[in-house]
Image 1 (tube, rainbow, N blue to C red):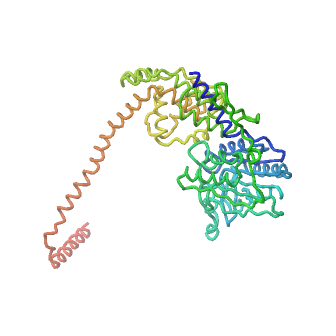
Image 2: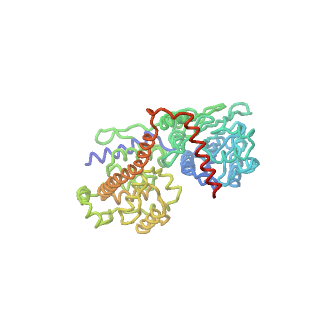
Image 3: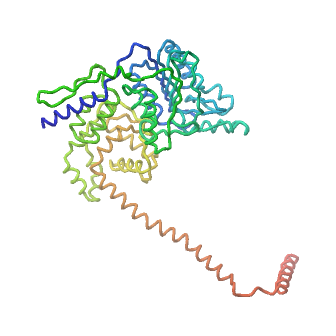
Length: 525
């Protein structure tokens, strides 16, 4: 056990030292503007831009940037942030702008969409949007470096609304995605501009099924890597996103840079890597990082990936020791509680028959699982639930878990209606959570761990109900088809192809006779 503890401590030190410590804030001024728009008033909300902005802002702050951050900004708010950034970055050596949200191109020009934009008139394009030219104008002049990163190529219903309001001759000027922008500088060439896009010009980028879009997740991983120049970092981003989306999204960038640019540590700063030193037992261990800065986002991600892969209590505890308030801390504690549960309990609950399970509905719930203060204080919203990315099967599983707690939902069909919402609110109140009827990712994890012991019998009961309903559906379909078949047979009896057609003279006389009878009857009436 002691050897394992030594190994685990060495592993944590190795991860931290191998990834490098956070870059110390350089003497040169570095400023960033980060905007993420998710909650659109006149379009479907985007789950991830606000999360993406928070992730990128945190990544840049850890690399020594002064960050101006804005989430869900209206038209006035976006212009106000641009003004603040323009003033603050005026004498900066490196200035970065990141935007995630809706965008569109018209006549080859790109427009970014505030959350309050209602584009029902052609004039609103000028008055209720932000042109990327405004971003370009906010960058400091040479010899400074300006970087603009746009995760704004999502499918945009507001563009279709605006196109419908324009004459047909103008609607053709709309394009999907964003138009390419020329990155040019007017100085002597020592500074420059770089513009990066989430996907190819005119293409659509994916919002992603997780907390972040594929593009922003890759940016956070590679953009501030120590010793990696920005264009090399963006090449790595392109490779990761292309692989993640199976070639359906390919980020790109264009640049006119007069020197190498490092958003993280430069090559010179990253060069003095820590050297391994011999321990008392003769084994090699990593030296402590030179810097006193806290571990980076990438270190946290690497430790969490390793803990998740091992799925053992010591690795989760090692993660929590380094990041007690980290992004995965709540899930780590829930996983530790789950691993501490005796396995015999699961087998015992699974053996309960259907009648007994109905009689003790909800009694097999794990009540020993604790809820952290962080989970209790974080309210669920429509945005946090959308970010989970539940498909139909996931929503059905959610309904089964809620019903297993003793709530009557009626039909289990994957549609989260009023009854399901009410039941979620009741569950939240019973567990000391904010009663919003919407879930956070951590709340759903807590619900899953809490109800897992009884889900085998619940799913078996649900499958049996579906099997019983299937024959009734088939009988109804057969009854519906039977009259149609009889009608077809009657038609086949009437239409005889082996009987010769009647004589034309006879048919003509019959028609005349029938018409005369009908007319005579009308006259008598």
